[in-house]
Image 1: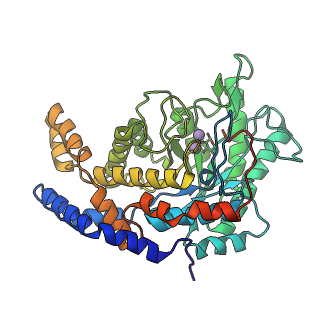
Image 2: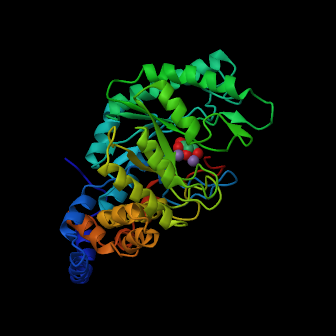
Image 3: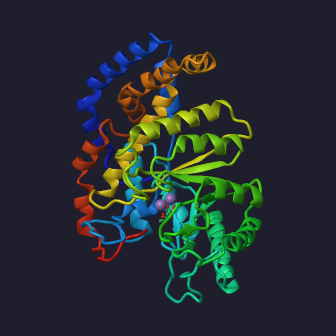
Length: 430
Ligand code: RM4
Ligand code: MN
Ligand code: MN
């Protein structure tokens, strides 16, 4: 029996005020698309089956490395985070899974946690390990690395933590382990590049060996931070080499903020797919580095181009096509629920626009070296306002036409501010 946090009547009442306008807009867009041979209901069907996971850690105001400015009603534990994630899914109907992070989300009874999520209409996505921070009482520090540390006992501890995450994930019903390590150096000469990678591969292969048959290990690369001179898995090259060495269950995860500025991420997506190693995404946006800003807030065109490659990849599955989609954001100045609602809409919108690309026209232009028409095939799809398709998909599933309006009408955060204890100050997450 599911029990969702917001009143269905409130959502229905808010929707009723927009229903006629939405019907008009959807019909008009349907006519426009029909002129180019696109069936809007078919696109609606694809959009309705799209989903993206939300990160448990994104439900709080993560802050920056410098400060955290908590808001009243912010969640203080995984139970409250789940409730907030259920609000996001109830309104958007596109975020039915939560990606947990351990030990942050540790509880004593994971079977009960799984049921608790199910009662909120939520399942579980990839489990994320954390060997980038020391925990109280931990035997060996990660100050000098984790899976790649010089010290064998530290590496062993990091391996065991990842295996524990797999065990937890089994209880939750996850099938992916995402591994991001902060390992790297801050000074030239600090570590030998080759030997640190050897140590990482050796330790990662022990984690890999513990994966159940239907599990994947998603390797997340990141160019810098907290290591600012070099990181062990710094880029997609290191990531794919590691994934190839580990084996078929190891894939690469692309966090959009983990590259040098202006890197062609959509091409990386195509490359990873070409070699059967595209495992998943952490969606966010950035201006400078790993800014973890809201998806599509800085460079929505890049997000569209990424989805254009994903749609192309799906049509040419080569060794299969099954990337996990997750949001990975840190919210400093907004209500995290509002940010994730807005991001989920931006992500789904780019997927919908990518579906509208006239692939025959694009491929014909590519074949005949007609650069302008190839570009226009993308530009035409990018300029279409797909909001009516997204809203129709949400309403049909019980969500809100205007997600932010319904959320504000619900006064959810103000109610939680009465019930929840206050979050302490302090620095945020990386
Ligand atoms: C890292 C990376 C990981 C996330 C942590 C919190 O920069 O993006 O995915 O687990 O931040
Ligand atoms: Mn990430
Ligand atoms: Mn990051």
